[in-house]
Length: 61
Ligand SMILES: [Zn+2]
Image (tube, rainbow, N blue to C red; front, side, top):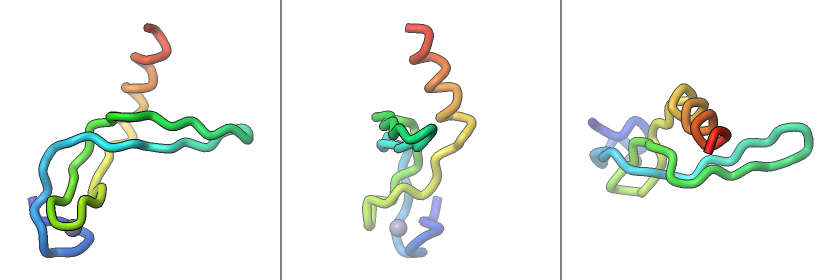
């Protein structure tokens, strides 16, 4: 998929870190599935649905 940010690179499925701020706390979730631009290593797309499901899974471990 063509990168939507730089319009130059191609994106690949990968993982990225995602930070949430809630109630004065910051929670960082690592290795969330995302589309990563191979040109600038930017996170092009990270589904909030995916993140929510990820957090849900972690909460039950
Ligand atoms: Zn890019």
